[in-house]
Length: 155
Image (cartoon, rainbow, N blue to C red; front, top):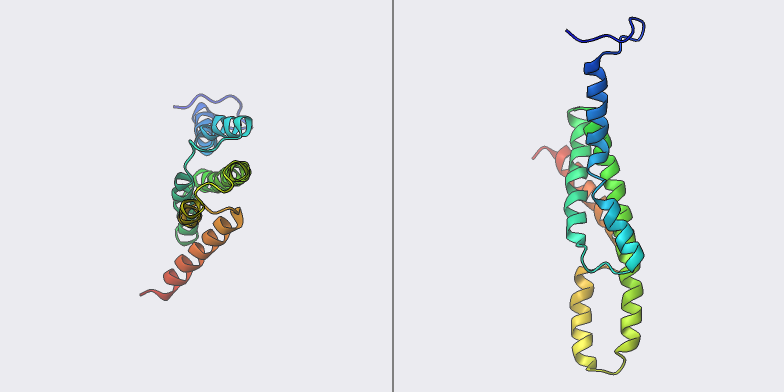
């Protein structure tokens, strides 16, 4: 038997606990990234943060959003996925911006030192760490297109 605060509102302890837990579920995934964002912004150093984590979370949350269109599940999980995607794009934007700035500073310091070595490693490094966040957005959109097209073909 639930304890009722008011008959008109039918506000029960179970409802309040449900709302609080749904709110915690929605923002709980974002909270660990707030200190990381502040630290990267403050130190202007994103070396300790992996963009592969962002990629994995973007793929997982995008798949969850796309799955919602086929079979509806609870709204807090859908909202959590949307907020996590926004958070991951904010983190990617910050990391790309900081890494670009740091690469320009480091490139000025290493002029004319082992040019061939730098050239080879800069090609390899540029394959895995894009200098523009638009590449991440385009990759995400291409991923969604492939999943949607593949899902609609019913192979």
